[in-house]
Length: 399
Ligand code: ADP
Ligand code: MG
Image (cartoon, rainbow, N blue to C red):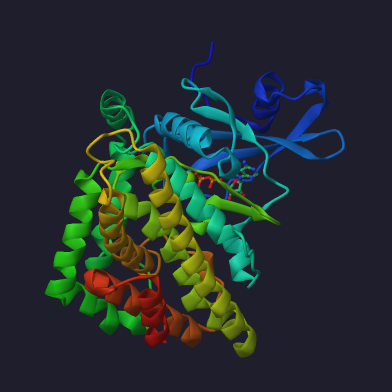
């Protein structure tokens, strides 16, 4: 008997005792709702000594940060749990472990990562996790290669495209990523003095055509089972460790979307650092962030190429050189989607702590302006940026 009802803190404890997989379930006695996200309830379940042991996440039938006026499918919990299970199968080291999922309750029970920290928060403080970008590149290479046509049986791939068709969540991305920042829209939010700069996004035909192309690829290129929202707020890091969470936006889409989202968030932090830290420290950490950008792409590209060479099952796609040719297209997509991520997180609705934490308003406007300008450059120049070193040179030129 599990008809949908919104969990109370006590329900969450009871559920964790049943499905948390702990050896001493009666020691779980307390819970706290910690969801700082925009959409769902997240409960930490504590034992008698006050240690958090299990996480319970429940989808609400609406968008949490907006309210009941914006209904949203509960099926997103299934998508999240199943994407994370598949990603966990191919990349167990860097995917949060799902212990249990219940469709009627839209609830999943997962491994507790409270001993780690959300990467965005660490980046806002200027902290460096030197291995994290390489590990995120590995996660992207493993999950995206193994769910693609290079590796999947063609019947399985087509069945999975259907199983992970995620219209309501994709609709959010389609609006927030590709439409609203380029229109006058009530959900946009940016420093008022930047209006002239933001107006240039709306009025730039060349840019609008490139964004149309990116959106069209997001809508139609079912290349791999994406995470769909792999930003630094969906990633836990610790010393030598990285774990990805929160895959409810997962669907079959263009590989460059995930890689570009991940890179874009590193670059938002890069642009925000002068507003977050004193000048010399900011300059130092910016160099580390550029190293992260390089490490992320290299690790993804090398990982994907190695897998394509060793494990491609499709005989045509396995033909020598095709993996590299495909990766070239993924690189161009990555730069474009990275540009749209920079713009949507600074102009659109989904604002990030990197920018919100800047106290000085003039400084904040300067950082947003830099992110928007970089985003625009990347969208326009995507096909002309030769390689990762050329990208880093462009970022430095941007200021
Ligand atoms: P939403 O889908 O609503 O954005 P998230 O999955 O991002 O929710 O989770 C919101 C917050 O809950 C995270 O930022 C983190 O603080 C906490 N959280 C989520 N999953 C875990 C976990 N497995 N271990 C520890 N904390 C978690
Ligand atoms: Mg989420």
